[in-house]
Length: 142
Image (cartoon, rainbow, N blue to C red; front, side):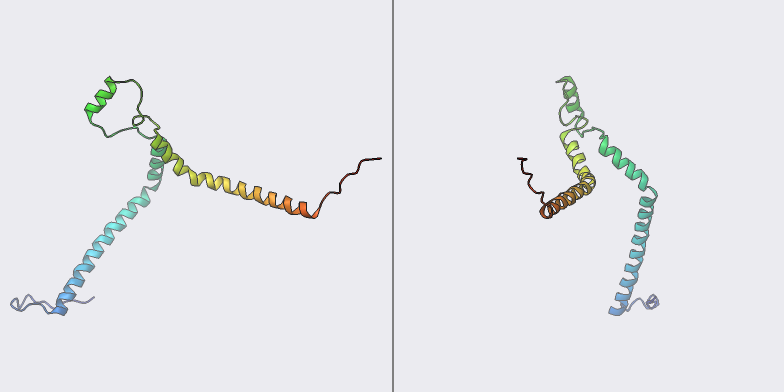
């Protein structure tokens, strides 16, 4: 590691451009080390709590809380008003259903894809074998 000369003995002389660059380099390296340590701490936290995050994500996807960020006055009006649930307050509103459906599409595709491939292979096989093994027409008995 490079060190800059101690200029505190002669404060009246400014730093040379090379010394300024070296000082900036040392400062940036210290900042990088600090940010790297914070990033490593965050990754450790994520690594330690991965299962909790996964379970929390699945539960919030399947069982949304139904909380809305509305003012208390609007909630009071909704309670006093109609007794029907509005789409915003429904447990599984259209937005939630679309989110669940969108997240389940890759899972459904991974289940359906092997079945489609198997069906296509069997279909192609039967078509190819059908070309080479034509049944002779049955003539009526005379």
